[in-house]
Length: 260
Image 1: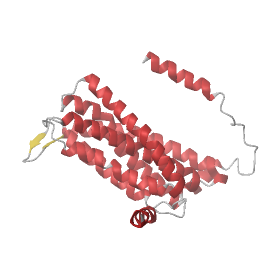
Image 2: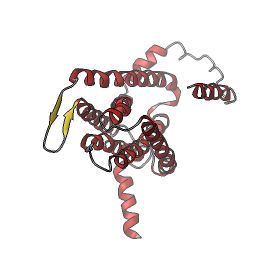
Image 3: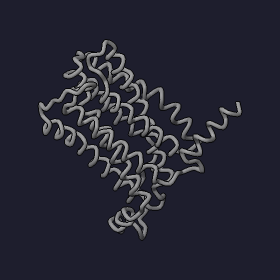
Image 4: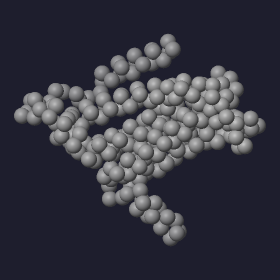
C-alpha cells in the first residue's frame, strides 16, 4: 500500500508537466452551464451512450468487486493466487489494447466497442457455468481473467474514442463531459452496493441442480450478464464516428479473408 501511494504521488507530480489547461476566455455561453447540461440530456445520442455506459459499468463492477471473494471462498484458491489472477487480467488488457487501438483507427470506435461488449459477456457466463471441483479449474480461472482484461480494455478504448470523437460536440464539451463524469461516478459507486445487496439478500441460500450449484454468486453473475447485455445493446444505438458500423466492418473483414 505504501509503494502504491508513493507511485500515485509520483503520477500526480508528473501531471504538472502536461501542457494546456489554461482558462477558457469568457463567452456569452459561459453563464449558461446548467441550461447547456439540460440540453445535453435531451440529446438522444448522448443519452443512449450514457445508458450503454451505465449497463457496462454496473455489470463489470458487479463482477469485479466480489470476484476475488468468490475464487477464494467457493473455488478455494489461496490469496497469492488471487493476486496473480489480477495480474493476468492486467496483462491481457495491456496486450489487447495495442490491437484494439490499431483496429479503432481503421474502422472507427463502434466496431471495436460492440464486439468488446459481446466478449465481456463470456467472463460472467464462464463463471456461472464453471464447475468448481474440476481438476483444471485454475486454468479456467486464468482464461476468464485474461478474457476480462481483453474485453475491459476494448470497451474502454472504443467507448472513450466514440465519446470524444462523435458524441460530445466540441462547442458544448464542458456541459456534456460534466454529465458524463458525474454519471460514471454514480454508476460505478452503485454497482458494488448492488452486488453486495444481492449477496446479502440471498445470504446462505443454496440449491443443487443436476449440472450446477445455484447460490448468491450465481445470481450476481446472472445480473452482471443482464447489465452487460443491456449496455451493449444501448451502445449499438449510438451513431458511429466513422463510415463503418460493426456489421460493415465485419463484412469487409470477411470479404478480405475470402479474397485471400
